[in-house]
Image (cartoon, rainbow, N blue to C red):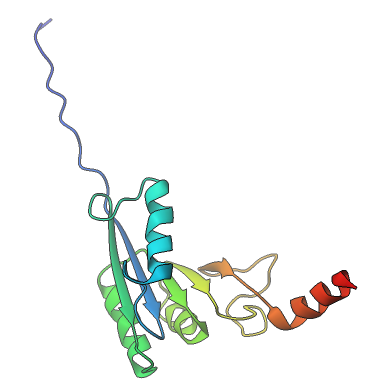
Length: 143
């Protein structure tokens, strides 16, 4: 046996690549929703610059830029994309981005983003606020 001090070499932590595309401005650290997203990730151990890289893109109202931004993120090997809005979610689905978190994309079943709520299939997850049907149900509960 060899006795002596052991040198522990820390292995570099994995760098997780996250991107976001918004039809408007980018969800960066200056954007209120971008701040919330990055703060929530930091609470779960994903720290920007340490183990998380974040590429926020915004089409600034130009729908033709959405597809371009998605293609650039896919080429950059971004593993997860936060897609804000229906056109952005459709572009991500068309390019087969590995994981898409759709937000503000309407009813995902009615629009064809997913097959069904019980078995969505594909690579899209997210929040669906079907305001038209939920509003009438909420009003009936209040009555």
